[in-house]
Image (cartoon, rainbow, N blue to C red; front, side, top):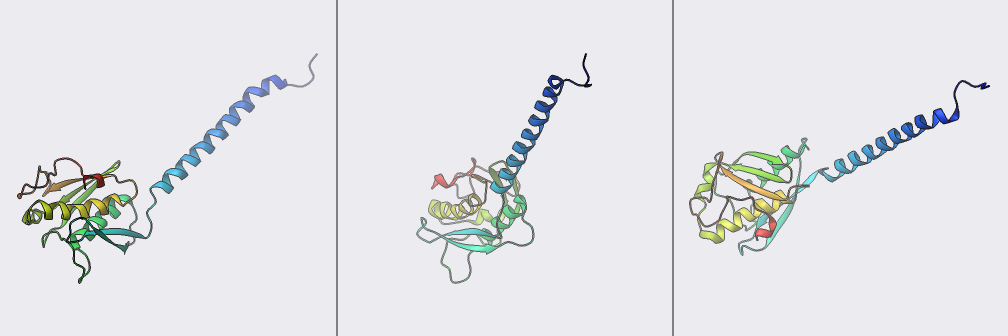
Amino acid sequence: MEVSGARSSDRTPLAITLALVVLLAIVGALYWWHLSRATAIADHIMVYYTQPDGTTEASRSVLLGPAHDRSSVAFYAATQVMAGPPSGVDAVRFPNGTTVRSVEVTGSNAVVDLSKEVDGLAGGSFRESATFKSLVWTMTALPGIKSVGIRVDGEQVAAIPGGHFELDEPLTRSDW
């Protein structure tokens, strides 16, 4: 004759289920913490400018404003490249008036849509390569961005009018 209402063998599946739920919650919390740390953005970003030799990159740290979400930081970084380095710094620059229309970040790729003024980039393949190098190095310095696609005035282009530098595939640091 049994005196207690529940046998210890009845409680074992409940204990195992409870332990699994707690374990899954801990694993989920650790995974969330890891992802949030991997994509965290500091108060500063590095902006790169290609020196006139076309191979050397100079960098400067730029303070971020109040927005720290990934898309806003990517847009800000691209606009800093278009603005160019501080006066007195000798570097290859985007044509005057070139602006960033938008930046879309999807996964590890950022697509930067530039205004049509970028079509005024003259100086052959050397200058085209050096100019886009600054943009790609700046964007890929941001956490999680590995490649940069280029659009001009909302359109995917094979190259800007000079035609020396291909833009039909996303660019990475290894392209230089």
